Length: 326
Image: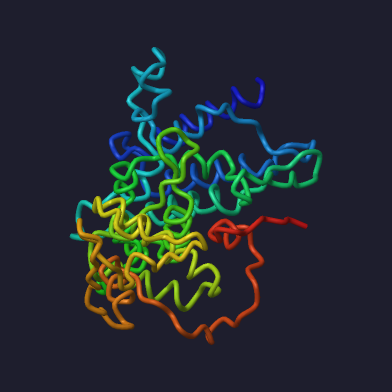
């Protein structure tokens, strides 16, 4: 069996096992997740190469039967496949506002695929290309995730991963670290349906509760370099404006890319060429606007230090980063 064909089989087997209607137990789901991760890494291939995937299979993994490929493929249309995103957000039947224990492992797999996966050829890492914007090109898994609609992304129940109930068992709180990494990727690198046009997301599009947004904000300030924080904030402002159909900030971007231009004092021109200056909203106005989007400006970054990002995941979040893998 050729690699792409086997990859399709592996994806279908994983999605069937993750489906709660399939009747598998927790251990079965975890074993299948681990088996798929081992397959993707290519550890079982003697030639030191990672397996090949058809382009359509990336979205099939993320969305199952909701993927465009499944909807137009006669064979797949009859299967009613589950999805990795739904597995990440599968709620517990017996615990309110909690996740299935396997959701934590599913999120860990997703994070690995979109941020840590490295394509190999004959034992050597294939360096990611650089796209037209100067950023590291997304791998196939990450590209499929970043072209998902907000409604599909919401099936991951990211708020339960980020701020699960304190009285819930640790395994049912989800995978906070992995989920936050995925959120950074989605905010900064999300794409329109055409798969090319940048369409950054606002934090509130991914996290519906104030507690979850606050938890993510705290995680971001504690764990990410200042460059990544600023990239997230810049994208969140643009994404939040798009989500709320408020393009005023976009109209106020100056030629130098001043992302806070939309929140600064501006003049209104009348027909007789006279002007009035709007009230000065104060130095904290921009921060207040960010608060409404679920993010605070971070002044200090003492916890982790000011060294530059060194992981592909960090570079992927920077609007000017280029991944270099040694």
